[in-house]
Image (cartoon, rainbow over the protein chains, first blue to last red):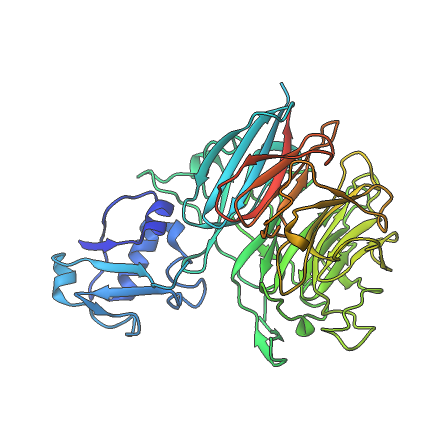
Length: 98
Length: 388
């Protein structure tokens, strides 16, 4: 089970509080986790990745085990800590005022 | 008992303000969609409890929300009530999918080069006059989308961008399709206004569109005095009984057409400034028009720090300031283009919101004003609805 932490705006949109647990098919990558997240919460489609291109929205960042994975390939394998669920995947809104 | 409902979109959420027909005591509900920008909300004319809302964020994109009970609860739309929530109780809607039709194409960028169309947000929602499941969305980058399933799915009407879209360019606030007027008398006719492209009209329900900007002068932005497109139109308004007459607040100049946009003439008259954003028409007097003059395109606040609505009772050119109850010193707020609305009671009510978070209302056609609420986030839009 993968643990995902959403930013405030997306938690309220999805109607959840706290972390979300999602099941994804190995080998586990960002793309597969996001696919699983959007399948469970269709309302999140288009809010993290653009419709159609599935490119990361420019003001959304992905943090994995204290590293910024935003610019990494969505097909890069996630580390064991994420796979085992000892660390969450953090999806955050970029610090950009507002 | 007749009620008045004000739908207020702000920089940090939505508010629903309710009053009885006296319009003296108001109940403030909200914020809904806290932390999100709400550019616009509007109710169906045939079912005022069906409300569409545009919720957006530069971070997380566009979401359409819908209420079927007058704003008490909201959902991302599904096709039927049982579809609104999944088995785990989570919203299932995918109402945020706005994808341009066919080849995306390019428009003019600030520096004059061509730039690809990029969807950013819905600026304006216009529900159908006859079917609560049909609504139109004016979006940035400028285009018009239509839903026929209550907001669940949206499809572009691409004929609008075919009307010289390669020459459109963004204004300071972006390239938004911000006004949609549905003609109540001529089937298939509607108008769209875009900053900075101009006004466009369709007579075939959105299949084909043509620019209708003859008479607009934008000498500082458009050297060509006969330019068909590229004009920074801020807002247009019409009266239901006389839909061929339109009033326009342009970047500079207040304009009027009597022939459905074929020709425009300036009616700025004695206004202290003819720059501004909103314009609206009295519910029962087709020649009574309201604007809020703003000092200039660089100084977005009222001239002399006095917040004044100006009213013309003769369709333009002769304007009177309406000041009773409005701040007449040290006021430096703006009133945005979608932030003024009238109700259909008699006497007509008129309302506007400011970037300072105040919503002002007048229950006597503008003669006197009171602050309904003073400290909301910056107000983007106000829509008034009478609820039978």
